[in-house]
Figure (cartoon, rainbow, N blue to C red):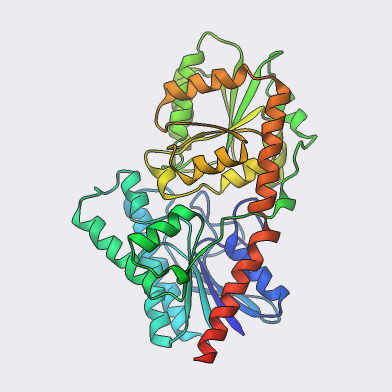
Length: 418
């Protein structure tokens, strides 16, 4: 069996995040299945080319017997605007589609690519080559664009994109979604048959997160926190959909208090705007840690008394941020900004790992932070450990990865049988 993986993000080395495609390739090799990965030149999360790379049209990276990575040209989206994201999507769709059409014929294609356009081009290639396609849906489009107010829900563009998304999903041999609500949408709104929809939540390698990392003490010491001050931490991409601006705005409600400090770790298109706003509101209340090296993930998260996961607008209804899994595995309680009927809110409720407030409301966020500040350390620890146990049982590589490999193998076998 030979599997072609097309991934819109595929770093040259492991990082602490949800790296579905990288781990799928590892899982295939563990079962002695040949894998070819088509991916852009590495540039995430900052939209800048990684050191040591020179961007061209095609770059082949042999990884060993039966495994190869093919880097394809695409534009980069360093500013995360609608136009730059579209160009990134369509440019990678064209180059990855042409490459998938020209290389040796695989037995199955696994697509974890940019939605609609890049995935649509790959779907056409799969149909032309008569190769079964399995797609992984991390975010629902165009619903995600609607939630970010990039397009209107009642516009012709939204209707057009929904039709394309439905056509891709209906022509796929399997559609892997990350939650029950995603499955319901593809069944009820995209008319995909239930037997083709597979629910496998996102995951990370639990071994990459060390709960209660002793280096967290050093992180706290470097912040010079006053005695009794609690530390809230956000760690992740500081982009348009992340909603970090709401978190920054909430600090205005702590102007005359000395009970809370905020650490924002990461980088992204909105970093400068958030830094400037924090400087205006309370320069001593917020510390930015950027860049955030992967080997400091556990130490930064372990330094927190609680972790904050904002989302913007209706985004929590269209995606489940992968950073939630990292948060939960760190054994720290989570305060999330999400709608109560979202999968994000349901996970926090089911696990008992934290609290949920409405997005885009810095006043409500500040009020909930005050409630968290009043909770004793033992209760915070209990909630954090509940989240870790839930994540280990539901979002670990050991639990989820074999399910994806099984689907790819079954799809390939079914084609041979037919």
